[in-house]
Image (tube, rainbow, N blue to C red):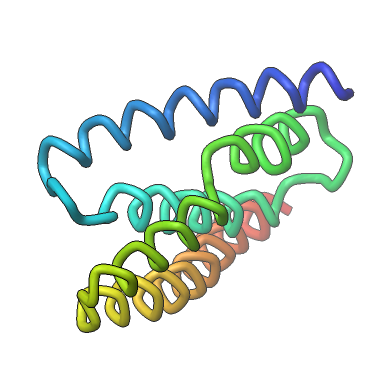
Length: 121
């Protein structure tokens, strides 16, 4: 099982890096790519709630892919840099927006998961 999680984490990290590179092109100097990554990861985590708990696919995706894809440390570093640079409104938007959008994404994912997996029972 550890190998499955490790492969998922590696793929998640590669995807995160790719989105980060694109984010620097589209939003230079702004941490929008990290916000997008964390919200997408939250949505995926919510979707995975409907999968059987110990399935290999869930292990590959949730602690594996989502764990390698999302990034709390980058989120906190980006927020700190915005504060350090006195970009107050962007810092507040980024910090609060990431938390709220992440929570909404998890709920949306869970609702979709319930529709998909409860409809098949």
